[in-house]
Length: 279
Picture (tube, rainbow, N blue to C red):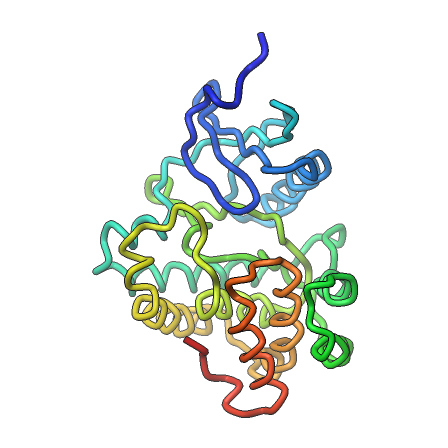
């Protein structure tokens, strides 16, 4: 019998996909549009790669098509995610920031399988091909990208508290859509940037939305202290990857972020307090 998406119980959502309760205590990550037909099997492979590196990720149970949309059946993690936890227990903000920093450092300490796309190739494609990238930033970003030092570490590409879930005593890293291979410093800066400028995802608790500016500063500070304690950073590499990471973010099409991205990119280009957050 055909299953109607409207009859499924939604348990979570993001910009790319919705999560629904599924049979046998599992969940269905159902992509929002038709590109999921290509994304779902690809992301299932990425989960396998990350798991092979020793990272705790949700188990994958195959790809399904439902109502013209494609998704992946996944292990259901008990939860909550750490962004939801911050909303419910804001006094734990610094503790959660520390968990985030240490977990990302652990991910970035792993050597990436050679099958994973290099970050340099991904960002180059995004910056060159997207019409959303401002023309005056395209060439400078590509020039800095070409000169940026390389690496072969496992990069999550979108690691933040909403992509970390509790499962009893352990933490599980979810949403590996942007996984890449490259220097740890680039992934660190991507996460730092998201905590500085990132538009909050659907379903963000009201407390986080109302106190986002203050909370982000605390969260970002705790993350920035915890990460290098677990995995030392080369500041010169962080600086080298700043502009390409910022400019590639335009290609993701989150218009609410565009003014801040533009402002921060100009600051990096002008070398004026480029290491300071924009809030």
